[in-house]
Image (tube, rainbow, N blue to C red; front, side):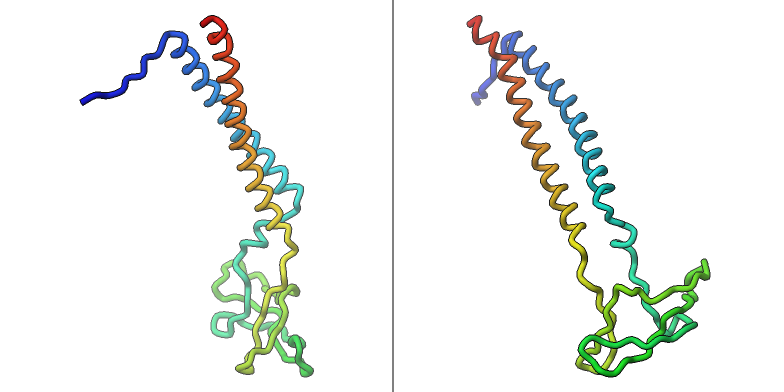
Length: 162
């Protein structure tokens, strides 16, 4: 059974060790730097993640008590419908009053029932996701480029001696 053994000279071993240490330091610096840049972009975009990923609050007549009703006009309909505007959720220990989200559109379905449909988002979350993908791809490319350049610079004096 023959195995190929790579014979490394002490100079090659030293260069490999230096490149390995450089790679670790560079990876740590890029992780910290890219995360800081990501948080800066997230803060600068003004995207409220609590609002985006929050559980939607709808009136449920089984577990809620309606406090105030209001008239809402469904999209594409002439006649308004009466819906609960403020309610208390019996499962919420805080006891706060829940309100109808003004961003929701009231739509009447083909079955005659009224549904709440969320409006279109403003696109800032998509822009943040694109920036994150670009940051990760750019970081990977930059790391590979810098490591290759560092390795070439270390091995250049060794090539001159040979």
